[in-house]
Amino acid sequence: MLSRLRDYFFPPPIEDVAALRRFLSGEASYIAQRATYEFSRNTLAWFGQHHFGDDKFNEAFAVCRWESYAAILAGMVVLTRGHLLSAGVHHDALPAPLTRLYAEALGEYPVPAHRPEGWRDIEEALLGRLRALGADARPEVRAVAAAAATRAFETLPVLSRDKDEDRRVITGAVTFGMISFADRLRTRVDAGSVVERLDPARPSGS
Image (cartoon, rainbow, N blue to C red; front, side):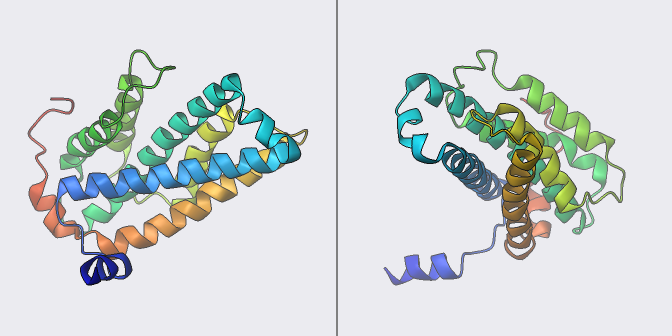
């Protein structure tokens, strides 16, 4: 009991790749679910109960939730790369293992119904994104969040009459969550320990 309370208020440092994967996946899942659900609920207002009881609407919402999760998780991997660089690792050593971590996080769940071919295109896009970053590149949190929020906006199951405001709202929600994540990333993830356990030699997807 006491140990659980301690871990809740003072979570242990993240020192290996498996723990890092769980951390990123949990954070991305929470932000994706909260941002898209709250947006949809607020937009639907009194009609929310009816729509969330409709199978077709829930299918559309599931697409949004999954695509948002994948986009937010990809953004978190990009931010994690910047944090790991502080341990002195060469930037070329990070794209493959971080893309593999991303693929493994997505692979922990059944393949969504709307993606019968899986996430391969998204994984390859992240690998290219990581490889394109310069040695000293540290993408700004708000820019990373905005890119992820774009995918969430594109797949939202409901929109108001003011699309610009909708985009601002969902971007704000994702950005708030991403800033909070970035703070925890810096304080919880032991970059040196994680880097020591990365295996850049093993090809991504193997």
